[in-house]
Image (cartoon, rainbow, N blue to C red):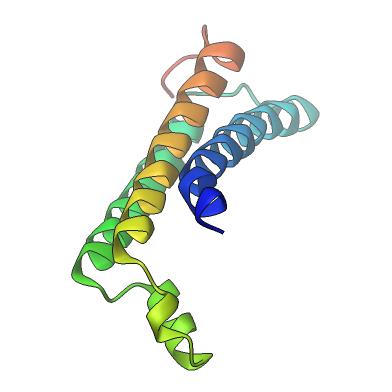
Length: 115
């Protein structure tokens, strides 16, 4: 179980990279289907909101008031919660989201206008 916990942040980051890369691809495909020219703001605005959400989740995890802790408490397994692992996992989500958005933007929207 300890091995799984140690690679959990890496898995989270990889999944976030993939999901955000695919999200940018979907934006480009939808714009193409709707005959709209994709712009950088179509990715920047949701990206900023995602980063803001991730930073608030990191702050909650550092304070020990994260949703994961409440889940463990409700199930009667409050001693299973590890705050350090939760904080590392939230940082991994932040890194994965930013990396996925940047890779998707560079790959699919490298010549797109800002607005």
